[in-house]
Amino acid sequence: PSGKSRGVAGLLALFLGSVGLHYFYMGKTSAGVLFLVATLLTCGILGVITEIVSIIQGVLFFTSTQEEFERRWVNSPSSFPLF
Image (cartoon, rainbow, N blue to C red; front, side, top):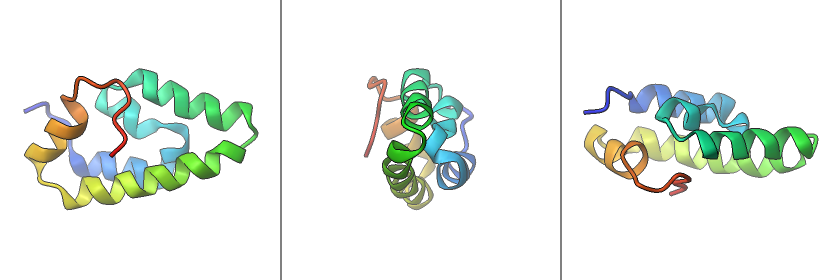
């Protein structure tokens, strides 16, 4: 187990997902930086898209088991896991 809580990741995705905090929490810093830069440099225009993606991810975090959460998002070899 990684020690990463799917509940914390889900809350971060739902409330602060447009800036990528859930990715930083899961250790996927490149994805977090991408979300943050996309939101800041476009004055929030891409922030709407990243927020929609983050809401979907937050729901997926809450509906998955802890093992599935760690396998699909935390321990994934992908540096930018979406769904």
